[in-house]
Image (cartoon, rainbow, N blue to C red; front, side):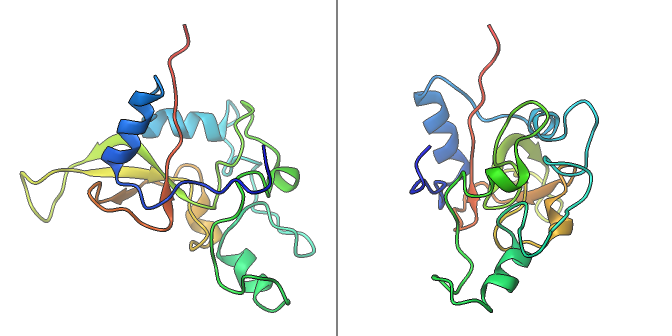
Length: 165
């Protein structure tokens, strides 16, 4: 892992799916994503059962991190993505060894949510994990948020999964 690695953002769900297929992988379901983040003990966050900010050391890239950072002479002074491994030392990995599952960018899943506003329209997709723009309560691994899969955002990215052989 290099310190210059930022997550890929501004991708639609179809972009993420196409990349995963190209790589011989797939986009995980919301349920798979949640199991990977929560582990067998069903913790609230990938790193444990509490958010646990200590002495301005944060477990992930989230709104609270940027609220504290903007008062320091850090650059950049506005919320943005951070290198994918920046918070690994602070929060470690999920119980299954998966890194960076909380904060930084929401992650597309393959799980669909039917639209209530336009019956028959293309369904939304579930995003998980929270982003640099969300507060700690939105980072809970069990949370389910819906996003329009046709849109790319500066705070939505993806991770790939593959079946065990």
